[in-house]
Length: 151
Image (tube, rainbow, N blue to C red; front, side):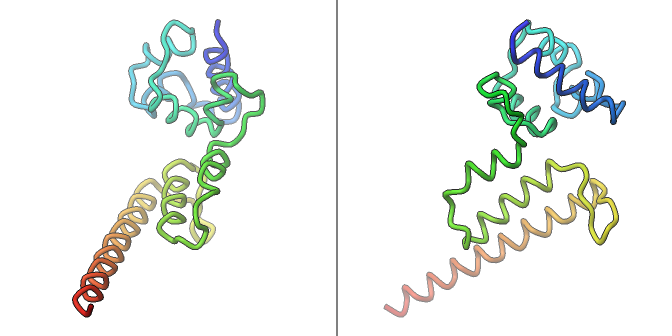
């Protein structure tokens, strides 16, 4: 069995100790593949495409490098994403909002005012953020057009 297959099974089984719903079928449904396909990933008879591998890493909250055996440290998926984006301007709110959106989509244990957030709550917040970003972009575009007309 290859490293990826071993680590997929290990990650799922470790989570399953506290969250019994983490069966192969549950994981398959979460990442959008058939159960037999996910089982093939765990058995090492099939390799997931990169976008599926990314979804699995996000779901298990480990780095893709860990799943592939490039490191033995199961670095958090979110930490990996933040590290990859660490070169971005920390004052650029659009980049910060993108990171927040990624976290909102991937973290199942988020709360709002101490209460667990439902998927509907998360979707509403994401829609609101996307609307706000569209409005800000429109406003910026209009300001640029106005500035160019003055010249």
